[in-house]
Structures are given as C-alpha cells and as structure tokens.
Length: 118
Image 1 (cartoon, rainbow, N blue to C red):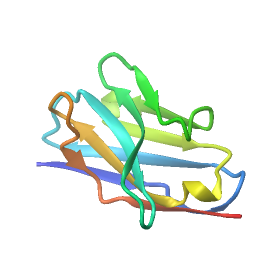
Image 2 (spheres, helix red, strand yellow):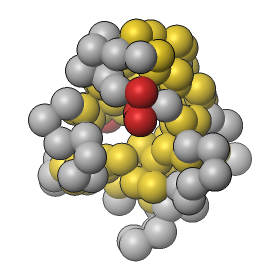
Image 3 (cartoon, one colour):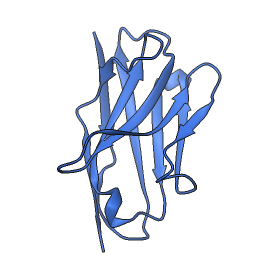
C-alpha cells in the first residue's frame, strides 16, 4: 500500500513564500510522475504542476508560472512545491499526487491547507 503525506501548509500574507513537501511511503513503484493539485472552495481541482519522475520534465499551470517551482528527491521519494509571491487566489487545499500508470494520477495525499491573506 502506498501513502502520500503532505506537509508545509499554513497561513501567510500576500507576497510571502511557502514550501510544501510530500513523502511517498510503502510499496512505492517507479512513478511516471508526481504532481501537485489544488482545490479552492467552490472550484474544481486543478493541476498546479508536475514533475516527470524519470526525465525530470516539469509542467506548470499558467496561473503559477514564474512563482511556483517543483522539485524532487528520488532517493527520498519526496516532491516539493516552492511557492513564492503568493496571492490570495492561491488559497486552496493542496494535494500531492503520484502516477504509477501513464496518464493517470492514481495515488493521492490527504491535502494541506494553504491560506494567503491580503
């Protein structure tokens, strides 16, 4: 069984930074990718960014390009999301996800709240 556990959320003011971490444990396969999603109240969950686990290629949503950075440590089965210049509209529950099947995120963390005050 695979577990993903996020940490690092919290309450910050606009313009400040946070770093989220996600550790995968258990019988972890070689991932196709790991990523971060977020869901704000009343909105659909959206992909914030992802990291190809083998090739290291990254993807970012337009709304976070230039402000958020994804990185990973394969030996620790850990992925990070560095969030700079945070805005109130970044407020959401952030979820870590991992893909063991191509094209599908099939493992999810429990989520961590990020709140950005203006």
